[in-house]
Image (cartoon, rainbow, N blue to C red; front, side):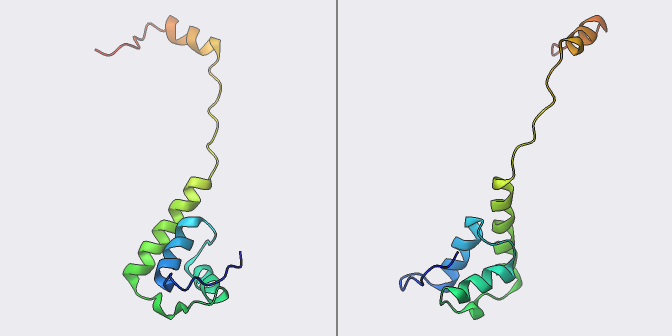
Length: 91
């Protein structure tokens, strides 16, 4: 995960990149990665900024989470529905 500091990218911009990338799981991990890349993590402060970064980190986790498989539809289920007399059409 080690990267070289880009002179044209500010620490704040890089923080948002890292948060969106899924490479970090927490704000502390994000700050450690910034320092490892040569950025100052001192500008990553404040409740609003932290909330924005946490939201992006969580969204990147959600995108990486595998979809759960649905149980296969059994023919017996269709028979039960059909024989119950319940209408599946909209009224």
